[in-house]
Length: 76
Image 1 (cartoon, rainbow, N blue to C red):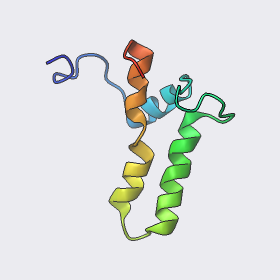
Image 2 (cartoon, rainbow, N blue to C red; image 1 turned 90 degrees about the vertical axis):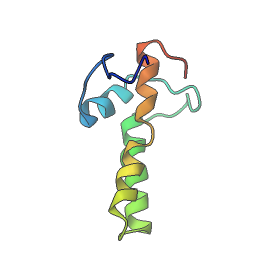
Image 3 (spheres, rainbow, N blue to C red; image 1 turned 135 degrees about the horizontal axis):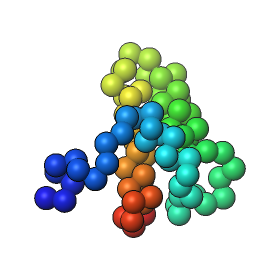
C-alpha cells in the first residue's frame, strides 16, 4: 500500500543511478569507486558473457537501484 501508488518520488533510471553514488553501501563500505560504476561494470560484464541476451544486460544495470530507498529512510 505504501509503495504501490509510486507517490514517494518519481525519477528516471539515470537519476536513480546518480543517487546511488550518494549512498555508502553497508554491504561493501570500503569500495573506492561510485556505486553507479558497479552497475555499469555489471551490465558490461553480462554483455560480454551473454551478447545475445539484451534483457540480461538491462537487469545487470538495474540490479541495485532499490538501494536508493536507503536515502529516503528505509533500512539497507
